[in-house]
Length: 74
Image (tube, rainbow, N blue to C red; front, top):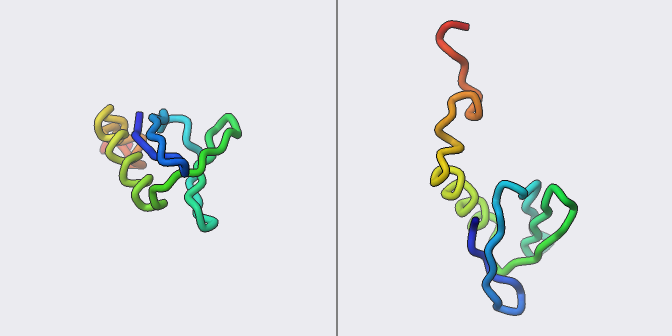
């Protein structure tokens, strides 16, 4: 989960595994795989940093296949 802030200044947590896209128009809008959208105060770059930190914390980025690396045997 990542911590974010809605436009009304209320903090909430969002499961980063369900994030499909993060855009700025100019407000930062997060679209989930379900189609639900959240508009947050954080910048696009800040949201991306939080997503990467979350992935690292659950060791999602530690898998070489997910990083696009090939096995030495291939």
